[in-house]
Length: 194
Image 1 (cartoon, rainbow, N blue to C red):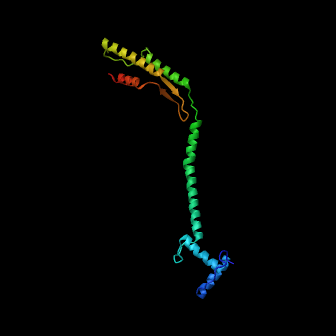
Image 2: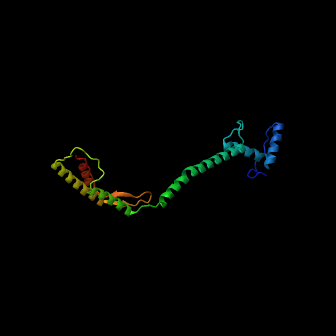
Image 3: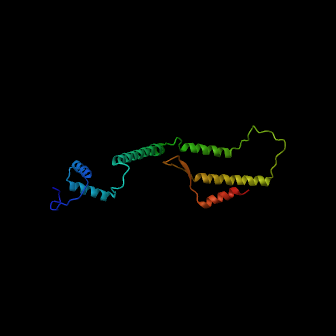
């Protein structure tokens, strides 16, 4: 018998013969009594908010196929994102971590020695074009230029003493300047003076 409905009485409903034959075949396929099949149908329509008068143009199987295709498309998009964006980014980050600096601190020292040698060199170039007119610089202007040169040289040496090599783990090493803002501004104004 029907569980939960054993004590309820039966009532009759007038149904056309062809409709009754269809309903009997349907309830036989469901393996339930006519009352339980009819109850299951009514609950299905109420639960899903579907009206028996409206037709669903797609079957459940076609909806499952459509959902499966959409999931496959979503998986393809995610794989594409992983292949084109995530993996190159990961490889770039790994390359940055594994990168080793080819030059060391001695190379910088040699460069500074070369610059200082160029600044202090007293030899006159031998391959100068001859200049017909005599160049004369007033003694006062010459003395001022020499003083300015010595000041700039001392300032440059001071700045070089406050430069340190900063080792960067993510990229190239760079130089770090350890000067306060006042000293930096002083050098800026000194260089702008004619």
